[in-house]
Length: 148
Ligand code: SF4
Ligand code: SF4
Image (tube, rainbow, N blue to C red; front, side, top):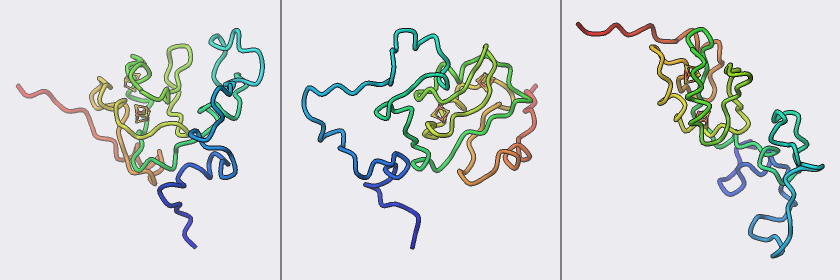
């Protein structure tokens, strides 16, 4: 039997959500807390240190939606943070102004990060979902020379 889920079920298995109420079935007026405990200082905590509730999108993965993914090349990156600023899904992981890589649980493969990367060659490039990072980096283009 195929492991590929039909369109309307994609993402449900990752959520473990088959038996849960859908977003359009929730009782009007119900409150869905994003965090399990007091969230007063949550903005000051790193994502991995926050106690997310099962209703927070952080606990879900959209990895099965993606057919292409960005691969990050540390050797070329200048830590300008452009990709971190522009990623619409907060899927670039940056700590102390240094890029650590991609959050592949939440990246949707839109390619915005690649578009805004200023280095030559780019430090992020899109590859097919199945390729390993090592194989992708082995195929990285060389620096383009300016035409005189
Ligand atoms: S491909 Fe899109 S979602 Fe993924 S890291 Fe880049 S900008 Fe973010
Ligand atoms: S935009 Fe490119 S150079 Fe800038 S931090 Fe991101 S990967 Fe590095």
